[in-house]
Every structure is written in C-alpha cells, then in structure tokens.
Length: 410
Image 1: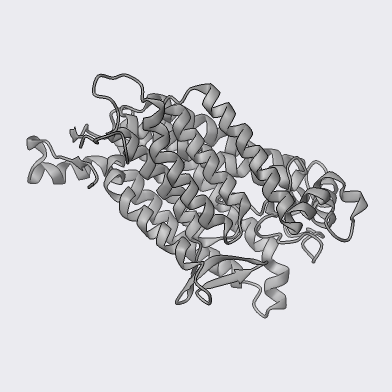
Image 2: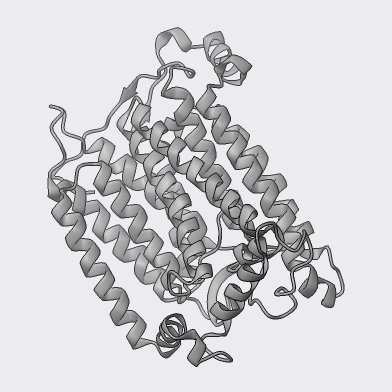
C-alpha cells in the first residue's frame, strides 16, 4: 500500500508553485508562536553547545584534544540548524510521503545493530552504527519515524463520516509497530529508549481518541513489564537498588546518583561559574551526555537549572498550543507527539539526574552531546514550527487526497 498523495491545486501549477515557495520564505509568514518556538529551540541549542564543551573538556583534554567533542557536536549542529530552517519553511504534510521510507531506514538501522561486528558498543550497549567518520544512532531516527508513520496511517484510516476511530483501528497499526521497535531496541539493550517509544505511541493513540481506560490499563501493564525486565537483568536491578538506597552503595550502584546530587547541591543559587564544575573531574559519570543537567546545576546553580526547566516548559506550552490550532488531523497528532517526545525525554533525564526516577541512560534533548539526537530533534521541532505556521494560515492550504484503507489493517 502506497502512502497518500498530496495534490497541488490547479492554481499552484507552474509559476504558482514558485510563488508559494517564495511566500513560505517571506518574513511575514512567521507567526508569533512559530517565532517563539524557534527562539526557545535556538536557546537550547546554544546552551547545549556551551555546556557540552564545559562538561566534556576533561575527558577530551586527557585524550589529547580538548576541543574534539565540541568540534564534533558543532559539526552536527551545522547540519541540524539548516535542516530545522528548511523543514520549518515547508508544508508539514510532505512528511506523510516521507514517513514510510524514513521508518524503513530506521528499522534497517535497528536490525543492523543486531549483526555481530556491525554496531559500535559503548557502556555495554550496542546502539551506534559507524558510517565512515560519522556515528549514527538508529533509535533516534526511529523516534521521529514511528510518530510520523503512525500519524499518517491513522489519518488515512480516519472514518469519512467524522466519527472517532474504533479501538481496533487504533491498536492494529500501533501495537505491532511498538512491539517491533521495542524488541529491536531492548536487544541493544536500551530500556530507556524503549520506554520513550511507548510514551510516543501512547500520546498518538490518546490524541486520536483511544478511551482513557485503555490508556490507563496499558500504562499499568507497561509499568509491570518494566519491573519484570528490571528484575530479569542484574545490571538493571542494581540501578534500582542504587536509586532507592544510594547511601548504602556509595561506591557501586549508588555512585552515579550521589555524585549527581552532590554536584547539584554544591551549585547553590547561582552556581560555581561556567567551566568550574568539580564533579566533571571523573566524579559525575557521563557528564556530557546522561548527566549534563548535573553540570548545569553545579556551574549555573539553581537559577540555571530552573531556567533550563522553563525552556522545556515553554516548548510544552507552545507544542500543545500548536496541536490545538492545527488545521488537519495529521498535523495535530504529529505536533502533540513531538511535544510529548521532546519534553517527556527531558523530564525523564532530569528525573534521573535529580533522583526522582531510576537511571535510564536517556539524554537531555538538544543539550546533551549526541549528533543523531541533535539533528533528529531539530528536524522534529522544525516540523512543529511548520505546523504552527500552517495552523494560522501562514502556509497556503494544500488540497489532500486521502487513500482509503481496507479492512481496518495497516
């Protein structure tokens, strides 16, 4: 079954198509919400570049080049920022066509990680593919691909009479896809990203009308499953012990959390100063990735930590506002799913750093070091900006022809 087509109205043929493109790039096409989203995203990217250099300085200097990690992250930013602007300038509905090949690329990448000798192993997990000088994390691509594909399928399955989706119409494409990407991600192993896939799919199903009892029931089953998975793996069980009783394991399971809390506590109101973290000197583990928020709290203090939280709160508000104002079902679903993904991942990361949640190995979006994560997050937020513009009429309407689906299957 091929993806749905987006047809050009007769008035936009030939020179009209060029005129529409010029209109999309015109300054007047940017609304206040789209501008606010762009500003918040830009501030987070700049914060990430500054803090990634500060947090990675020690290990990079010991490896012989203090600027190596910053240079690599800056290179990815120079890829992601133009991608953000390009995506933000285009009609978001082109992603209905691209969702299918993007999901295929993501699944191929996840499968390749299971082939011995193909993936790159770090910290006991094989999550990365080396492509020449680049290191790519397929699960980051899969986050965006899953929500786009599911939103497209559900849009094409939407009843013509305007009635809500039936439960079977919602669950048939969603659960098999979640099971597939979940198994592939758990095999790396990466429980934290698997949980995020569940959160993304749940957000899509909820906004598409899945009854609350199914959402709650699925959440209970998910929590129980996570408990079983944690108990089945000794290293996960150790993480739970270190989370619940860190003082009893100060040199083992509880070391990461205790050092993170020490760093946050020593920052005070205004921090020790940019670059002055003591925890990054081999006390805070993975200070440039999983625990970069602890470095922010130590160097920029309570004010810096709260400021970071407020930036993600602004993303939450603007993302929900965009979803509410979206003029099409696909845009509404995608905007909410992207918002839940970015903000939800940030909350999980901050929750683990502050001890509210067990350590999951989830990074802070746009801030932590990670090239694939940075680019995929910027592309996703570019789509959100595009939806925000179209929701207020900034992008001319495009007539869609929806390909009907048969038999309620995907």
